[in-house]
Length: 77
Image (tube, rainbow, N blue to C red; front, side, top):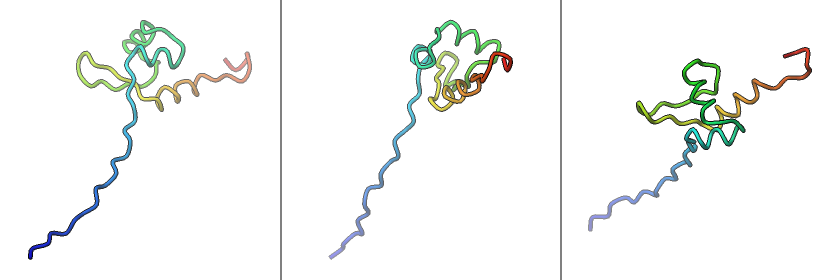
């Protein structure tokens, strides 16, 4: 009898979601036009460019962008 060794299926870790421009704008409370503008001039959150027309944002990059915008006092800005 030929018994093949069975392997247990491995769990695939959950993938981090990618947000489109509209979803990203809602998450950081801004407009899609502002995000589009920031992609051309720089200064906005990091993004992933999957193709010429497909841009996505990761939650951790949106959170990091917000963290860099926290100001402790009016004289610090």
